Length: 44
Image 1: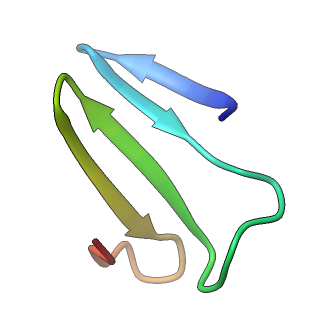
Image 2 (image 1 turned 180 degrees about the horizontal axis):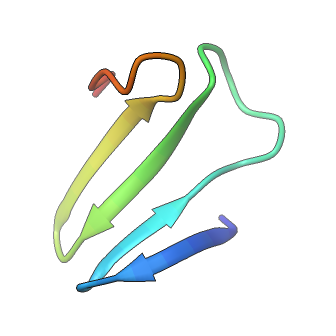
């Protein structure tokens, strides 16, 4: 998965052609979250 940004140990990643709704992944150690781009809501 392409890494867009890294700061304070948090990796922001995004696939080019993944499922809807448009979102990005954030990972910090063993924690993972999917964030919606439109309203910055937590998807998973």
